[in-house]
Length: 249
Image 1 (cartoon, rainbow, N blue to C red):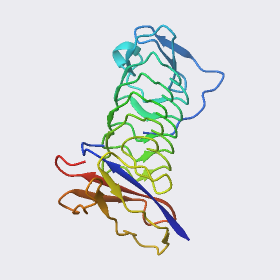
Image 2 (image 1 turned 90 degrees about the horizontal axis):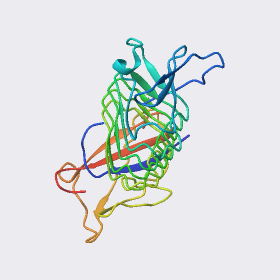
Image 3 (image 1 turned 90 degrees about the vertical axis):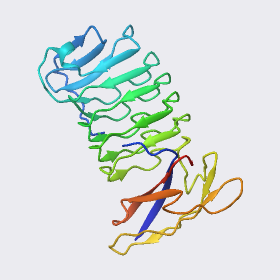
Image 4 (image 1 turned 135 degrees about the vertical axis):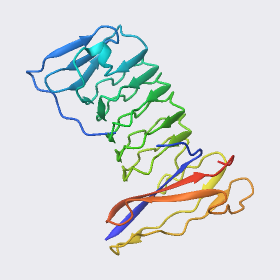
């Protein structure tokens, strides 16, 4: 068995959400008129957004909902293709962000995710091309496949120690991704390829070389950057996160 390695580089270390279920036909729909957000109150999903809602919204604000302290899941495709949105704040009532939830929200510049969220599902923010930085909070354990793919202005991402799984191509075509297959780089460094590794049942930590792009000089582990491995025991896809130290990239 092989462990295929994927390599990601995050230029700035800051800090660091989730499976959803389809709503049934018997849902009770509530419109938060202030935020322009629809809720399925029977199944506790955030399900959509009005065409005339504001560009800056808070999702799951109990003062707006008047529905008590329920836990809410942002449903599949709830805000997909909503170019109106520019800023989104999620309250601590939100526990999950579903597949394609904010896909192609091309004018979205700021997202605040609470510590109550545990998973960011597949394609959740794919194509959000105006995002430039993101802090994923402690508590998130899973980032789905292609979750931030095509966020082509995303340069700074913080990933917490709580994250144990990052899906394939989660940060493909962003400015903080270095891929084995795609061999992309950021503006200042290059990273050696990581060959497939043989399954051993133990943690696998392959040697990695990080070079300054202009001079081709090797950077120093522990001085210039740190390395963290995710999913490097079981067969399948493993992730290596390389984070610059200090003012370096």
